Length: 176
Length: 64
Image (cartoon, rainbow over all chains, first blue to last red):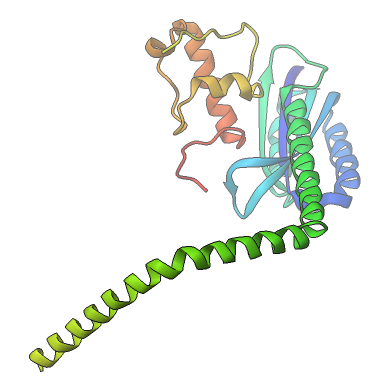
């Protein structure tokens, strides 16, 4: 008997099929004589790099007890399972029966994304309601100011552009 | 570089610790730079390499 830590990265598209899949997988484990000490359901995390076409993965970490002779059989079963993106079996000295840092980290990341989405929604709502009036006033002010600013400078600029256009025309004539 | 300390118990799942010992490009920082002991560095490299395989830490910054 050895202690093992089995990490699975599942396809995040499983979604509603996840619970039946987990039950099925645990029955496979018990069939092979593995005793499940602890199952850590980390949840969907963003992968550090894409695996195949997947940018996210559902992490599952099992703490197992079992016969080393059955590990190969388990690995072949996982290998031909299409919903598993990546797996790793590690032999460990002790069995830990608590959630690791990963679960906490994914929960925090989820919170952050939810908060961001919530803030973005609030911002969008705020922008939609009072902005038209405020922005109109601002635009009026800015446009009037721009007109004042532009009027002297615009007069100065126009002749220069005309001169350059004339120059280019004369140059073109010379070239032809 | 400021001297870093490695806690006694850590593994490939403690990515907050591992991230202190890799560069922006994903390389493992040498022990002579980070100041940790040789046995600690051996443990660290194993943990980093497992974490990389499980896509918890990038191998490089060139991967998308």
